[in-house]
Image (tube, rainbow over all chains, first blue to last red; front, top):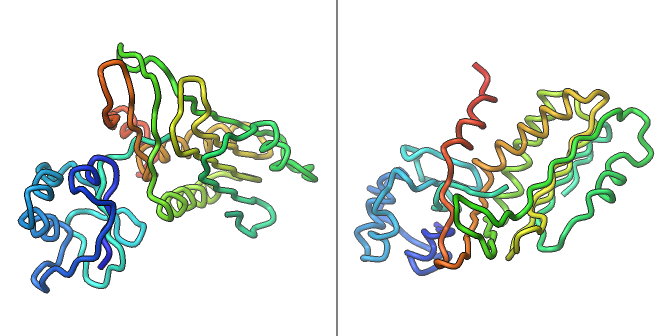
Length: 83
Length: 160
């Protein structure tokens, strides 16, 4: 699946997007964040406060218990500050 | 993108270029005799932010989702109020104080619906549309933090 990062999450991860293949045991947004955090210090830093991170699956906001199975694109970003 | 619904066209644009408010209102009201009220909200880059002077703001967005999210809320506004047209233009890029950032236009037969829908759209845009502001000031550069007051403003539109 494709993963995108925005604002300070992107800066901390060090890239804007990538394609990842998490193991099948990673089923929810929460579990994906935990799995990514274990991949490197950069991810651990980006996701150090997982409650602050907002997630979208296929362009729609989701909660941390959302199931990621079948998702084409998952995005992680800080609370929004547009307008 | 412009939806094909003739009675209430919804136009959503994300662009780097500035917008002309008078021109956008003229487009929204052209050849219409059913519109009695147009409410216009402009969001402008401001220099004073919590006692520090802002030199510039850079707006980043999530292409694709930003349009989709604004469209979802525009559609909800159309279903909640008797609207005759909605235009939302959000700029991205780097802005200095005084420059336009966002425009919301709502058209209706009477003013109440237009006022309420414009406020509803702005409240949701601030808290739910994927845009982020980075601020440059004399003390450095940093991401703007979300305000609880914006979440509270959005929460009041939730139907109980």
